[in-house]
Image 1 (cartoon, rainbow, N blue to C red):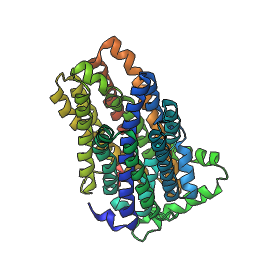
Image 2 (cartoon, one colour; image 1 turned 45 degrees about the horizontal axis):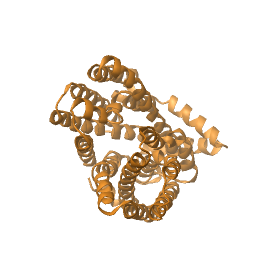
Image 3 (cartoon, rainbow, N blue to C red; image 1 turned 120 degrees about the horizontal axis):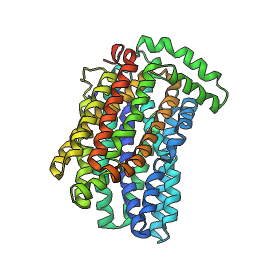
Length: 422
């Protein structure tokens, strides 16, 4: 589990990522509550939430920038932006000049960058660690975001309640500054894992054509087109991309968007109960990240992705049938655990199947799969009104299981028989 920390870059990147994740969760909670209280508009609250995913539209461009200029440079530059924007919001709050309009503008600027933050994290880890440590390292990296969903959100609410918005934002700004300073210590060079003496021979042999293809691209548009063709021609990448879109389409809507509905209309609880439901899912995800971080899971990454994805959807099926808070929390823990065992190996499959020169662009394209989430959410609303929550969510899960089997069969050679990540 501690093997990745032998790398100096990882020793600095992990706490930098942790500080960023905590600050983001605190900031989203603080600003979301501010928007709701000041505007008394649910529409503005939903709009604020949508702004957090704005950058998914341009994430492939961030991947191009990372491939061209280095993932380390891009990472600390974006975290410098977070610190500046947080300091600006803190100053506005301290001077009583803050307004919902200002919050939305700054949230939009941050939202252009944030969806690509995880892309740069993973691409950078794959750059300086050997393939044998990748699964465990990604599990450790996921701990930063999983822990933040629990502790970061609670810290944000507690800081505002105890000290007010301006002092709370001082804490957020300090976390971003710490992240920026630590990120500077992650050497922003273009050296890839394939250049390491510990890298696998297959990676060394495959890096040359990818580098030549990257150098031949004379414009960002050509880089994007080459990345799209690269993904299309590789079955492992197509299978992982399809699984990512499917998870966002039919699995995540239950936890991102519909959980307040479940708390109020199914379990009959208020904000406190909603917090327990969210913490249950995040706790399961954190447990899954801890299991993966041990780097002792013997099942191959692609096989684990498919099996855990199926278990996740089965847990969703049972969770949709529950009518009590405790049983719902139990199934949410199981679902969160399976989700972690599905999505982290998915990232490992994509990183291992991608040559170093294409990693940024390919992982940037993976973020586009997030758009399955709004599609799934928009479809679920009318269906719940017409058919009811249980039938709708059960149907989502059944459709997801059928399509997961289809993905496994369609790309079985790459995802099952040739799974080399064991």
